[in-house]
Image (cartoon, rainbow, N blue to C red; front, side, top):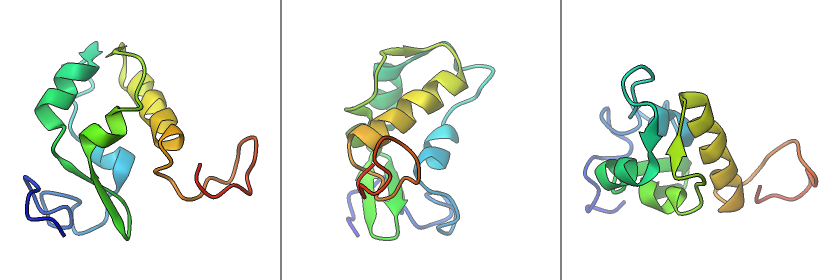
Length: 108
């Protein structure tokens, strides 16, 4: 594990003892009432170095996921979730996705 992370991705401050992964960790960084509409680039400037555990073997900085996120602003938390989910699929971060055009394809 890299010692360059601002927090231990498997510790209580990171993934809460490995109970929370990817989208959940990102969602915990925002306040649905106070943070929207949200500017993507400002969010990445603040949390981009934060470690996101994708699965049991992969941890990436949040900024790496957000390289694939469109649009540049989110009106609601739901909009942000949809954009991050699309980015996770576009960037090949998820190894399995049971639905879609080709459910047999491992990198979603």
